[in-house]
Amino acid sequence: MTIFEGTFQLGGHPHFAIVISRFNDLISTKLLEGCQDCLRRHGIDPTPDGPQVDYAWVPGSFEVPLVAGQLAASGRYAAVICLGAVIRGQTPHFDYVAAEVTKGIASASMQTGVPIVYGILTADTMQQALERAGIKSNKGWDYALNAIEMASLMEKLHQAKPLPKS
Ligand code: INI
Image 1 (cartoon, helix red, strand yellow):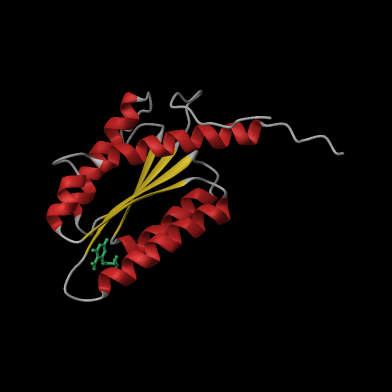
Image 2 (image 1 turned 60 degrees about the vertical axis):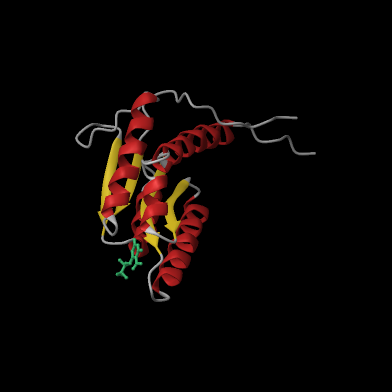
């Protein structure tokens, strides 16, 4: 039987899109830096005026799934990476935004068949978010790595020959 597994070296010049939420941009811009650093070190040119990565900025995480879904449906990208931060406040707003962005990204990925990486940090405090966006580690790096692995895996699945009819 076949074992399908993604790698971290992509052939050709695959295109990626990154959707970034401006809300809590102290965090999302740090995630973006980590994400770009990982792409660059895996041979993908992340420069905004370059040929390989397109960027879309949205007001908040709630708006991320719509834009990520449209980009994925365009068929132009090997993967779409979503970056944002939802931080708990004094009201239930956090729960609504976190739930919708999570469901929305999963649903857009399932509907389009394109990997859409869930790079939305959810944290109880700004301190927790900062620790994951550069102080201790930078999850943006991991999100880019997930995108590369999924792009590679999906390419292998697409190339697999259909099974013979029994
Ligand atoms: N958007 C975020 O990205 N993070 C948050 O923590 C957040 N909170 O808590 O309010 C947030 N709200 C804005 C929301 O994403 C929409 O942009 C807004 O509701 C307009 O649709």
